[in-house]
Length: 189
Image 1 (cartoon, helix red, strand yellow):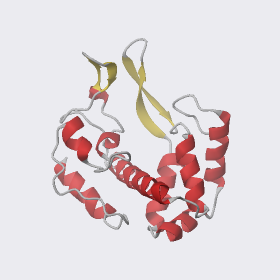
Image 2 (cartoon, one colour):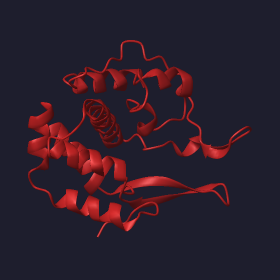
Image 3 (tube, helix red, strand yellow):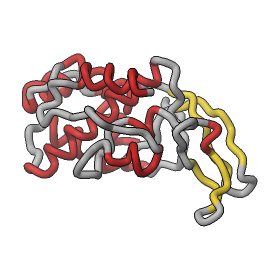
Image 4 (cartoon, one colour):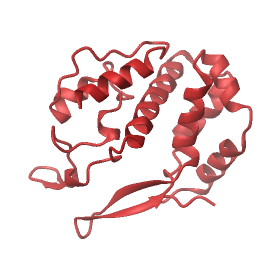
């Protein structure tokens, strides 16, 4: 039974359990979106199955603790996964799902390289916004530098948030360049 980092509602826990138990989802999603099965498999493992060691904040004491567990179920991710498996994504959802795949694929690879999910040194008290994770050019994690799901330019956050140049980083609409993109990111960090 997975141990989640945060509070999860029962519906989302059941949804993740359903996804974990699926045996045809990787194949169906890969064929539906014409993305490598290996990429989809690695993303499924990263999001739904694998335990991770993360630094979790305690807002009351403004401290962090290293905890091992699974990512807390997210209903939006679960819904997108199931819709992709069933070949039922709307055009805007296809873009969002592909961005999710790109983000998680890059994130898991950088974490496998030894980069933390979020830098422990980036958990600080911000003068305007309070205690939180505030990445810097020196202190950032894999989550912070992976392609951003919600921005029109998935690397615009590099300059604005972590102060790094994203020049030359381009995400192909069909995700055909994920491994090349990963290598380019590794060279920049």
